[in-house]
Image (tube, helix red, strand yellow):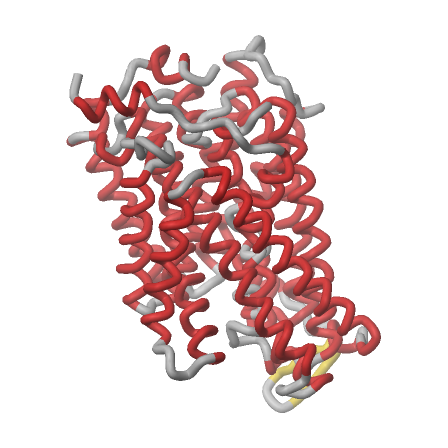
Length: 456
């Protein structure tokens, strides 16, 4: 046995997280979706079209997270979907599910990092945007490096601050809210009411997904939960409820205080909306502008954590090179996985192809949901006696609803949005991932009993 293998087998992830930390991770992973990105849905379907698109997307995530929580508590493994799919269908499906998770979690951070760089440059013009992006990535890789508990506490703090910023926005917007802003839809130089179209709603689905994208990433901290069977459902379900309230308030109030055309193609919709009431230099506008940075920070930090844990878990299983599962001797964190995530984030961010990068991440996420739901069905049928501390009541029916809506999301992403380049890039990425599996990855997979004996 090599020195690396000895270290990997003797050093394990530390159990130090409680439900509040998982709530912070789940909400923190997603909270930037309230500060930027979602408003592009105003341009595809109008405010009402985006809200309508949010209905099936919210139902999907609500049903999916129940099924996901059941698997996460039954198999509390850092690999998350990779572990569930491997147990259900074998190594190849485990590789596909884990690889889909990597596509989602490796391509979301660059877009957020670019936004952070541009945001800092907007506040301090002397700081180049690309320099700020590089610094942001480096800082949050370093914070993740020094320990999961420290990382989770930091995530909790910035998530709470970002949530307070949203509360400030909501509180300031409510007295000025006008319901007409939600139903108004512009066609060229004319304006009409309730200008809904099926195509517009379908094209808005990816931006509705952005309100919840990466929520499932909290499951990658399963091996670091103190009581995973009891705490994972608490953390996940409370996080889902929080995100639903956030989505409803942000989406409706923004349209109710500002012409949606002003925010439909910008990365900072909330400050611009506030400026319509209090002016660009107003105290509340500037405060919302500043706190918005914490929302971006929370998501970048949390998703970097999630991507590193997925790299670590797939490496430990044998899918990926062994060095990625090496843990720091002092902090017990997967430092090579963190460095690799940071480098990929940096290189991708430098391309500047933000829209394409986000689109690839969305495609990876929907593929991940599809494989995870297949795993849920298979485990319910093939392993009915598997210990499930949290079991979804009417699980097959709930999972069936979730699968139908998952296919709906996949259809809208592939056929109703301008994702041609993203689809092409995704096909190439998946082809390379599958090629790696058959050439190298399948040769080093650890025995099933050894791998799952660690955590079950």
